[in-house]
Amino acid sequence: MSERRTRTSTLNLRLDHEVFRAVERAAHDDRCPVTSFVERLLADHLHAKGYLRRPGDEGLRPEELTSENDG
Image (cartoon, rainbow, N blue to C red; front, side, top):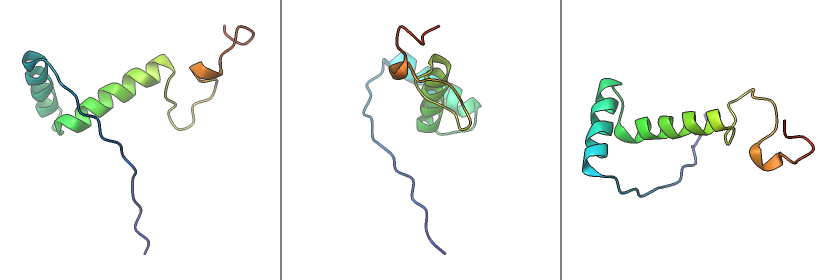
């Protein structure tokens, strides 16, 4: 049996105390760790803006857009 490893990157982030407490409460309500909650928020935003594709997504990424194919 082969072990599959997920590659991750580390991001150190400073947040306003009030924002962090709100994130902690939201993560707790979703029953997930703060880091997972923040990652999901970022991924959802990046998907919505077209910077990150979901599996099966079609179309062009923003960096692939030109004046000819933007529209």
